[in-house]
Image 1 (cartoon, helix red, strand yellow):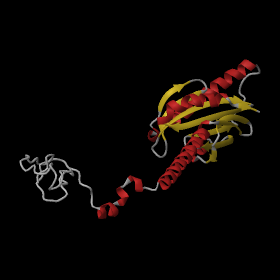
Image 2 (cartoon, one colour):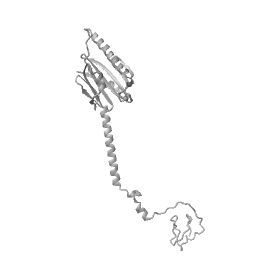
Image 3 (cartoon, helix red, strand yellow):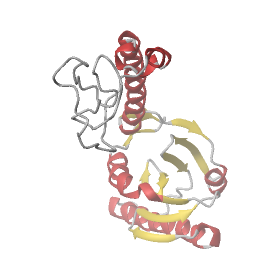
Image 4 (tube, helix red, strand yellow):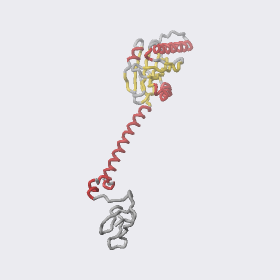
Length: 253
């Protein structure tokens, strides 16, 4: 018998084509006897997989997947992602959020996660004639201050004389600090901005890392207060305006 659909020649009493499954009738049926049907080759046919294979490869059947386990796994992954995102948000918020720090003779706003540390370079520069100094940092910003008691009061009796004296000596401090960086080739000092009481520059630190610094000097109570704010040069755009805001919050006691 030849199947009229796919042209497969076959023998069988039930008349079902083994090639495409078409029922061609049995030997007593009038549909039988398509012996002149033209064979069609390479025709895609559907064959039902034997039962032993469907049992062996049962895990390929989507209906055999335990949906409860899939949902449980998805929930676990979602919770882990939310926890990670929450930790990142908290870290970023703590780095941006500010609080007021009390440094004894003055206070100012800085990021909320600053911790006291040591900086031998800054301490060494101002070791002589210093009243107080300190260094604080987090993962992105470093703050240092030095209170120098070398205020000699070599000015006249009037307020204008004192103001002029403070102005000139602030400039002297700025020039001295800038010169100390310029004198060391390893610092790769590049001056960005300089005024009577402030200095902004880029440099390389002792670890050969590009840094950005905003320095400000404020005379108060016969002392010179020198403030440093540092960050990586790559974050200059992010922190330059913040440095200005934090320095504006300085309040003396």
